[in-house]
Image (tube, rainbow, N blue to C red; front, side):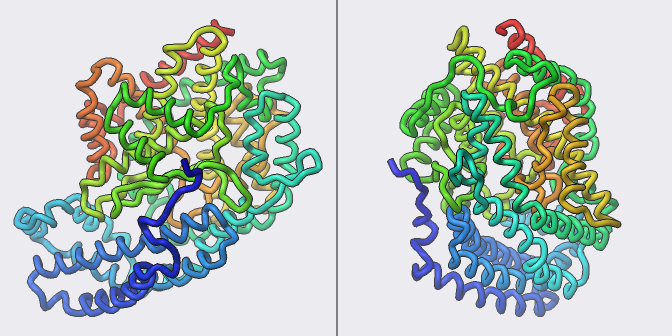
Length: 582
């Protein structure tokens, strides 16, 4: 079994004729869109709309040139060809901005659009998108301004984001007098040896000290651009812009946080219990957040990880198991950490191919298997939307974590059910460990980003100030669950979610996804196989519905805190079981 992914189904290389033809096709599309933007008023509306969607579909297909380069770069950030081509592609893409703005404004001003939707099959499939275009029209600037913004972002937020990714993937940490990557040092947090965990924690903090100033400039620059654009587009706040882009109501976010704050003390109790079990009297130190407990010390080969996932997924949904088997057998996954490879894990939807690609930094632990399950959940989400047209292939941030976190529940709950004693303790603690991340840590990230955006409107924050802001957020979110002497002041350096000019507050979707999935899993346990068609329909609807409407397919009202309370109570019950096992 190969341990690296294959991108050959996209392109076999930069010298692939298909790659070169698509680069040239980009130039032709720019001209095609410019010409169309000038003749729209002279065409029948239905014909004009179909020509617009011809162009938009082709533009998104050609965007996979950028996806290909980014995927190659994610496994080798020092690959100069990827950087060069990404620059060229981004420049070409920016040349579409003016025409695209004209298209959006043309669509928005059609009064009888609903009648046209009823008359045309493709327009009917794009009905949700068209309605969103009409709603979002009020936030569009002039054609020239949109073109300038697209071009300036290449050397603005996009460049600052690339800098953060490059620095965190190439910086070296010193551990036991040896150079190791940041991914390797962070993986040591899961070691069974407390001495290794503590030394790795200190080495990690020292590692960030080398790059913190440069990344502070990245964060400040990106957030200033985001603030500027939000104001120019007429949003009341960056959060308001994020929620609208996420197709999610503020009432839903408020309902979730209301329930989370009510249950936060229960998670603090879990952290104190773990700390006490590991010999700490002042709460859990950060370096022991991911310390394994119980008897799950086994390391799993990739083949064993595959069989583990297939065994449990087959009992849930056969189509999920079949897709996972394809992912392993057809080289969708890049498994191991290496120098120059970005840290963490992600899944990329290759909609034209009806495939996905998963990047991991696999070390063989049960936690790494859960991470694979999580990312393959994204792939399953993608699998369920591959029946949509290409412009309906993007789901919003809040629902992005639904299938991934659902997968985690399937794997861990099945394993817990079959376990006993020390193994059961290990599995339950592992699940609570992840739960504390989506509740306490995600809340700290939300608090931190809120504070950064508020302060960036009138001042620049140097690295030390950002670290203090992160510590303040961690103390509020983790309460007395953590030892205040051992927190993590540099969590703002390593989390790539802060470094996007297009997406802000990519933190609360993890809490939402975790709780939404937990609530959905509870429904699955109640309804059995009857739940599965609704689950698939819900996933399918996520790209063509608001978050709240998609949830209604499963009979859920997301604006009611009670749904989130029920999901959180399942964690509270598990914390009580953890206490009894201790």
